[in-house]
Image (cartoon, rainbow, N blue to C red; front, top):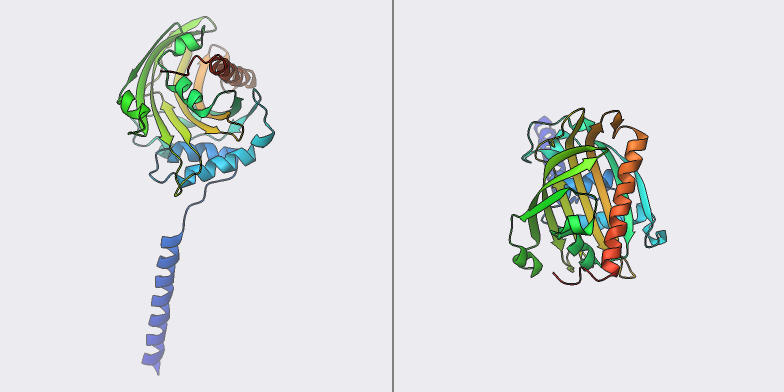
Length: 279
């Protein structure tokens, strides 16, 4: 009798393990629903082979910011939690940053551009001309084949940027690395095209005096609306101070948000003028 009970318990345990493995294999991670969680989600998953979850995340983002009510030219903004060191693991960033110092915030604008126009504005090498007064000098170099990307034979475009800029009278130089990913419509993943771009500083900016731009991480999502215009989401984590002004201050944060809103306003004007309708 005892041996029979032990055999029955072993069989029951085996069935539980088998069911656990079965349901575990069938489990599919869901995209989060809050903007705070979605920003980090886009950063972590932007290059996932399966784009279905990114598409789901865009739906959730649009619902969270009430995108249907956001008119062209309008924007939403807010704060987001800091990234974790695990979120930048494997990226060529030196020295190891104090990641929690990079304050998180988001801006979502409704651009007066088609998705293709917004994409071209983003990868253009003429950023200094598109945004006069922002840069003292600007150089962008593609690290992957541009023509292959434009033909859609390759979904990713990679570039490195070196620029000089002046903020509050303080001039600095910085480098950044960007990966842009185009996701085409597919029955298996998404019913729309969208573009995701991830950018980071590989090293602190060269900022003389009592100032520093030690960290900058950006995730951008471009997705089309029903009327053919484009939503542009920025998730940004930045560690910067200039004298008494720091990104930890609400006034400095408000200035950073306003600069992004102005950035997309200029980009929308470029689209409306048809200045990006050809490469």
